[in-house]
Length: 329
Image 1 (tube, helix red, strand yellow):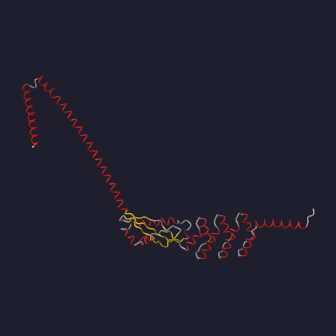
Image 2 (image 1 turned 60 degrees about the vertical axis):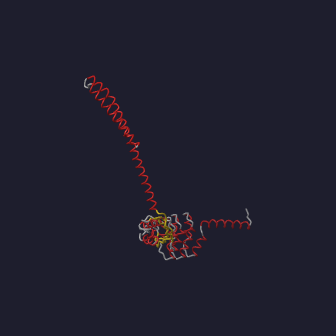
Image 3 (image 1 turned 180 degrees about the vertical axis):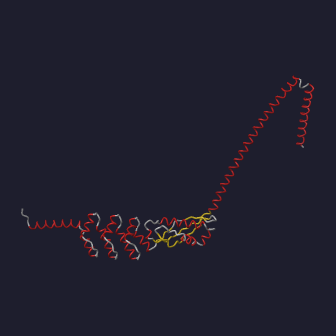
């Protein structure tokens, strides 16, 4: 089969283009040329091996070019191992460059450990150069005289790179500063002392060493706002008085109920005694009749008893009449 020369050249050019495309997709030649032009010594075989290890060569070579231009000596194995561990190579290199420019001692292993710990190592380096201001929420505290004081503080912190791994975060700083504010205000005799000397809070809180065990170093604590709140002491006293009043009322009601119960019991006893008296009086005629029948009581004795009873009734009636006249007069 004869092929025309023009068609043969076209086929050969297409084949060459396809082969070059496949070769360039596997072998990052342009990246290799860029690395060589930047002074980074890396072989084509190393780049191909990165492809086989499923590592994107540009993620390693480009940060290495930046580090070399910045005067930082790094190896391909260091960057590749950090990439395979799930770290952000570009951010670590940027942090190393920023630390190098700011003359902050930061090794690659330390930066990689901070990055793998989940912290932003570049932000930490930036905070070491440019401290950050953290504003606390409105902290409410009560002085000894019972007046509430509301304080807002601004805490200037600088990242401590040596304690970034395992150190506490901003939430711990805010909590400790709030605790120091409450302690300082609570130990003041009057809220006026806090209003006159707000720097007392700053000195007391700074003296407690609140940055121990945290990833930050506290540079200063400034009081941004101090307000007077409610009279908590008077409010508590009012509530206590109301509670005492309710307790006294409950005890009085208990005593009244006991008195009513005692009165009812006495009435019941009086009724019972009256019933016994009536019962006893009803037995008197029977006893007298029995005494007359048995001869223990004579007729004259009975008549004397009746006379005495009549005389007693007459005297009682005369006494009632005289009492009535005295009342009328």
